[in-house]
Image (cartoon, rainbow, N blue to C red; front, top):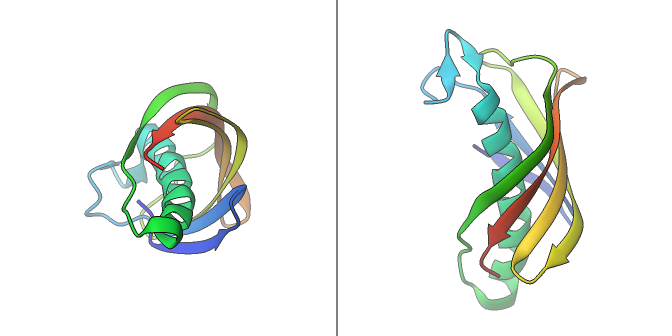
Length: 120
């Protein structure tokens, strides 16, 4: 659920994603809460994976370990473009604690903190 990697510097990542009707996490024309959460996790994976691929060419795999303080302010509609920003808060072994926000049309759509586990 990432169309474009806009920025990745090792501590933060920004991606863009346009919601489409074909997406399995669209229900009744709206991108679901689970889709927003997955978008933040995939943004983290895109940034970490990008840097991993530069170092050794391997493609990273990962999963969400836990989610904290997940807040949804609006559910995006089909054709809305999401801009997602993720910041690394801390790395502990193979766990990465991130803070993420999703915006659409300049408005805050969702935010949370999560632990993601990504092969590095």
